Image (tube, rainbow, N blue to C red; front, side, top):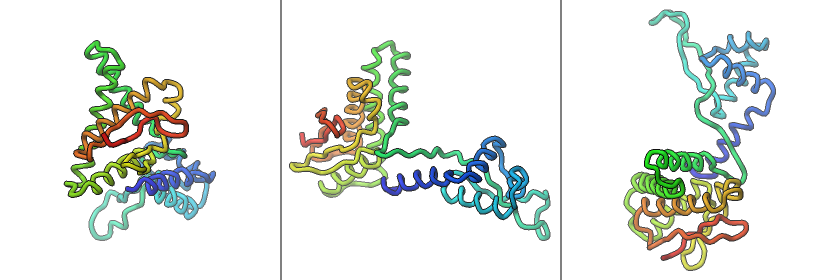
Length: 236
């Protein structure tokens, strides 16, 4: 999914809850933590079945509620009746921020570094550097495997731009092949712990470039500038 489409989907999911009855339905599904029919939801909230069905379907369309079909009668075969439509709170997380932030990724990288430090007794910063680079390498390699072999330098560069965009960096191609990262996905953390987080970010992006494969000697370098990510992608 393209970055813009992904953001639109997540914003739509949150916007779907900007209605009192839908919030009540979502709260009901959260409390019950099981599959509910339209009739059960209608009875629990004291609203007409058609109203409950309409708003449940809107939540399902937005991706915050899961849907399945089951027969509740216990009978099967001819004459058993149509399966009932059931709803349950979705298991997929829905969050959105503008500009895009990826604190989930930062948390994962930081946790991996701490776990490695506890396991080996090595300094946390050293372990974080290694874990961030390894994580970036895995993501880059997975992207390369999904895309296939790049036949031209332009195709490789486009793959890098797409991957950076997917992770919220808002990359722009500049003169001389440089890639500027307009957005920092870890902005608030970087403001509070600049040395640690910017170093982690640099290692993650260096690993990502390694994983995605030959990219005309693209190199991730620290280049702090107000209003931009602290890392820039330059030609080595």
